[in-house]
Amino acid sequence: MSRSSRVIAAMLIGASALASAQAAEIAVASVTASSTFYTYNPVNLINGNGLSGDLHSGNWEAKWLLDGVNTGNLTFDLGGLYKIGSTTIWNYGPGCCGEGRSVQDLSISLSTDGVNYSEFGAFVLSKPTTDPFGGETLGLGDTTARFVRFDIKSNHGEADYTGLSEVKFDGVSAVPEASSLACGLIGLATAALLQRRRNNAAR
Ligand SMILES: [Ca+2]
Image (cartoon, rainbow, N blue to C red; front, side, top):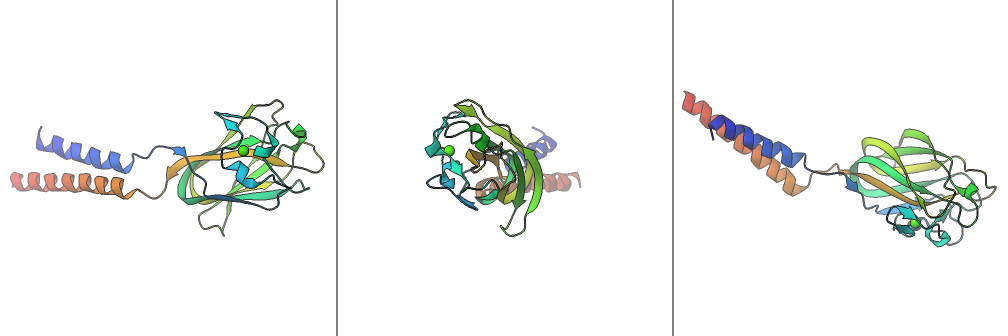
């Protein structure tokens, strides 16, 4: 292998190590709700409760409900900074006690510090009509954030209750892992060393 080939190879190894993270499901650290009815705990949204593969059973014990109101919010803490590619939302669905409980108008805001939020966008969610049902995936533009707030603006018609069944996020850590960072820096340092040797040899 020629010196210039070795330089290019070392640079490619360094660059690929820095960009190797693959988008994957983010383990949500915690979720809080503006209100909660009875035992419809918001933790049911982030623990996989009710999910079998990509489908939610519709079991009421695996869902969350606002407490007798149709507007409110949820705040998800991802536990660290991520480039968030998308969220998948399993709406309330028809099981106990009517498909009108599903969220319709939803605004999503993102924050790095949990204090200052920027609205990413407004969405209209569809209403599952049979159990079990799938989720709806919304793009979040690879935006870097730690906190995600869902502002629920309306539901699909029920008078008193509005809720969701499960929420997931996909993305990559916005903080490079120490091992991949070190690997990348070694690759770049090797490339620089080879380049310097080549420059010396050419003198
Ligand atoms: Ca659930």
